[in-house]
Amino acid sequence: MTAAFFRGKRRRAAAAAGAVTFGLLALSACDKPTPLATVTVGSTTVTTEAACYEKGKELGDKALNECVKDKTPKTVKVKHGDKVRVGVEPDIADKGWVAVTSGAMGPVQRTNQLKQTYTTLDGDELFVNQQMRRVEDSTILTILTKDGVWNFKLELDKG
Image (cartoon, rainbow, N blue to C red; front, side):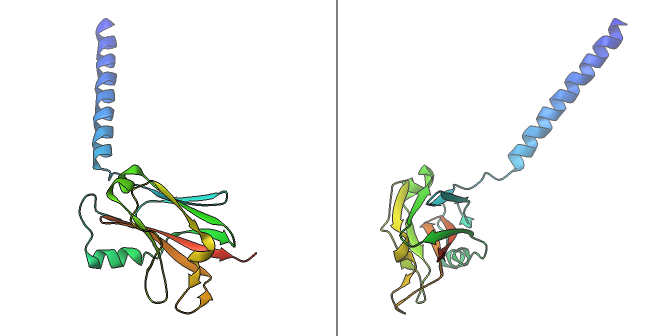
């Protein structure tokens, strides 16, 4: 009877060790998530991973252009007078980052290179198209570093 008890214990121990080993292998196969960028307008906060991220390696022009054209950015509504708060993780801030918006004549740089984890932008200014002298209904806000791109769609809430 004692021998059967020990055999069962060994079997459970072997199964537990196998499960732990399998779990560690599965976790090591997963890609580490990219650093996050966040946009907050009023009480609405949207966080996203990078459209493209090459940790430590510079994105080439072709890759950068493709990343900026990301067709599925998360959307945030912005009312007249709202402040748009942009936050990045310390990993992003340490490398330096800029915020740009889409424009009819190409990207419009909204900040100088920042080394802080957040900045505040005037929501009204983000929708003004200086070249066409009109207010757009939406714009893409892009966070750029040498090795990553994060995109958000800002929609003007006229309600």
